[in-house]
Length: 239
Image (cartoon, rainbow, N blue to C red):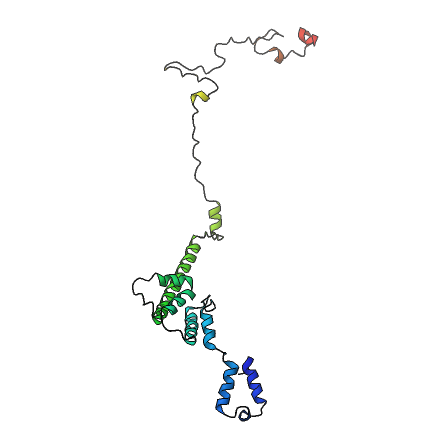
């Protein structure tokens, strides 16, 4: 009794000098203590809380919720019955409430609140275990699917850098349709006809007689006498 209202109460008692002077009889002490720390109407206060949303679980554990709910219905002097079971379902976590509502086999009687408290604890444990299992499984799958960069050591790095690549494949030739060709296709020669390879075939052989010195074996622009004035050609004199 060292903090809050309790410390103030103790301080006022010590002002009398002794407990005997403050409370001559035990009845005086109990009545004064109840007025100081007990609610004016504890039953009405507990009933008001149960008729509101103040008793809801709201993130608390199922054990904390059950303990507070049980203390409220005892203070409010609510009889055991369907009314308490309905309020219990209304205030608990929605996921747990749906699980309890889907029970078909081994479902407790709707008027037995103590049976519902027991099954709520067991189903809450199962639900939390399943959620923890799925959470761990999701983390494992995420870690396994995440690509990891290869660790290159000084020995393996050159090997990976100079690894020979596969030889290039030959390009695939795709022939265009006939109506897309800009020039007509030359028909192939029938078997047995030789191809005309030499472009000069059939042309007359040019005379290699020099027009300057009238000797064969070279042309006039390569003539050794092209520097001789006596052999200058007429077109050269004009130019």
